[in-house]
Image (cartoon, rainbow, N blue to C red; front, side, top):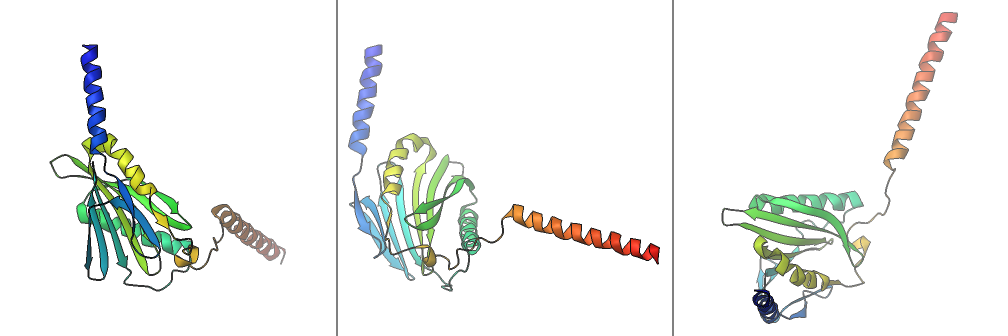
Length: 213
């Protein structure tokens, strides 16, 4: 029995090895490069460039879309709002659940990464996203897989995501202009508390003076 289990395990490892699809670097434009299977498709429509490819365990998509509004963002909070609205839009299209939403960095750029899980009755389907916003273009990197293949797809997605390269020419000012963080919450609380104390002190002083008169 043990020999049979070992044999089956070896066969599964061999099968997984044969199933692997090699990835090769593809230039999305002069600033972004990511690795895809050799047999990928590219479509240009409505100003967007869309790359699609089948991996061994998942489906890969990269969308390069010019922004409708190319006015420069002023602060990091503005970027955060744009990314938040983008995630909300993706969620609204499929009515799925957003999981593991977090900030990350790609090169010098701030990006958003998350998983969207959708269950339409045929089993849970997962889509891993990386969203990169620049003043001119937004890049959407997606890896789609069935939840049942999560463990098998993990390695392929890791290699796919790790291959994403951003030109060093892109930096913070390509996302938002000012690096000013503004006042932190503790500082704001201290200031407001100080103002309140001054106002209370003035009220007490005014009442005392009124009584003396």
